[in-house]
Length: 289
Image (tube, rainbow, N blue to C red; front, side, top):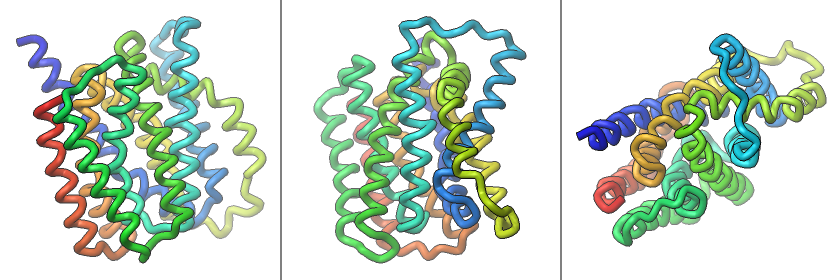
């Protein structure tokens, strides 16, 4: 009973994390209208790192052991630097509506690293449904050209790979350190580099930065970079990295809706159809995870 309770708690925590992350790409799209990708990536990391440091100091958290530094570096590379920077660059070439469909690749990437780094062993049926969902997303991206370019698509694929690594490494660490502690320490580890990058990319003028760009920066700094990971890493740790990671297949639904409602971007019926088929794969993957 305890194990089942932990599993359901993991799914609930993971679902909250997915809801928060769903706003990341539309918020990034709004933010890059006023800030360069380099400044946005570094500024969000610096702001989140300062918030994380405040929490660590206020709650008197112990420093991570030396054996954890390599994994923390992988988390920093994947979710603090790699994913934010590559998505910000990609969103200069593609729409937010198109970019969120690539999130359908995240469960497969996360599951692969769960096997390579987390020691999990899902059954064959799990991989069948995971690969099918990823294939639907990749096929959609290759078949359609409107709203995107090859450069933007490739940047998104690279971002997904690094993000999967960061998710799997962070979930494993969170079993020992705690979810918010992992992302806070990873942010602090990246702080010197991100602070230097922020100064180098500092805008020459703030006059052209509108309210949507400021709102986007605030969201990705506080929620996407810190709060979302509090729930997400705990969910992965409790329910299993590969299993709970399949919840990311729901993210395109929420992301497409936000891109349409907040940014006024058109959402083609084919995007909705592909997202619907991809989400159906999560049921089969969950059954065999």
